[in-house]
Length: 221
Ligand SMILES: [Ca+2]
Image (cartoon, rainbow, N blue to C red):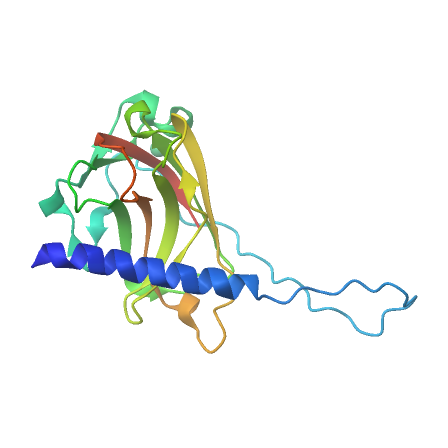
């Protein structure tokens, strides 16, 4: 039964991603006055982003990050997390990083996730989530590359919100960013985040058949 959750979960993510991409495209922009010498109104100020005060550096352990999501474990798919101390894969000379062991050889394995689940839902409106991600040589390609992104998830709504999908085309470190503004119209979703994570996606036409680790470090928000 567990295997049924993977395509379903993936499908939900993709549907929600498309929905919120479409929402972002319809966001209003401030018109530029062209012939009015004195503005008659003051535009709404851009809300201030909160400073990043939460840090996961993985210096001594995995800091309660998991493979998969609280909704499902990825253990059955050969995907797991471990603590890495090889300095090559620790960002900026730090002592540790999070190792996510992936397996993209199986037909059902179209993604791999490392996540952190909050014991109580968090208000992440106006927070910026950042992370460092290391792609080893074996997982990169320029043809139909895998992508990596940060995401946040609300288990109570079954709702996810993703950052930019970065294609894994070169070996090395990637900067991941997810800027969270106000919640979508009619909701306070971003005030009740239950999980954050990093997801690696593979499309079905990709020829990448990688089995091995990727690395995550310096997650902050
Ligand atoms: Ca570190």
